[in-house]
Length: 158
Image 1 (cartoon, rainbow, N blue to C red):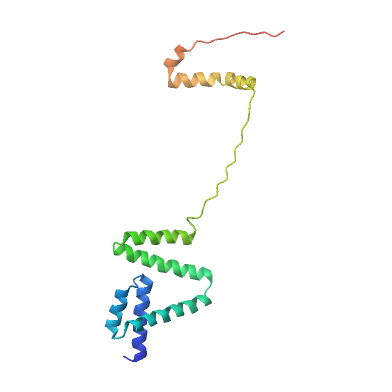
Image 2 (image 1 turned 30 degrees about the vertical axis):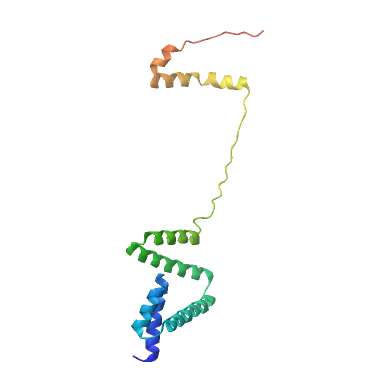
């Protein structure tokens, strides 16, 4: 394999680890040993990859950047779930909710109308619904009706 191909292969392996969120010192040492290079070379490759990402970000719209980030985040979530890293997955789900705007405060508008009635209006309303109330009691609790004694007062106005 030519030198450029080796470098490209090593960098693609490094980028895959970075995207999965597995960029640890232990993995850097493993890649260096596997490819027969110094750890500083692996670190420089990672810096080169970050620079390429940054250059690519300048050419991409914010909506595309957000979409790509969410795709990487969901891939990392799937990896965390398959590895039983539930705390990491939970944190990534919280991050996804923040990116998608699901944790933004919700504004609720409540409108309420209050009316006041004079005691006379209240009494008229109660009397007008007396028949409905009696029918309800007959259906629901007929024994309660026997306890009620009508208190009728006849009033005449002159």
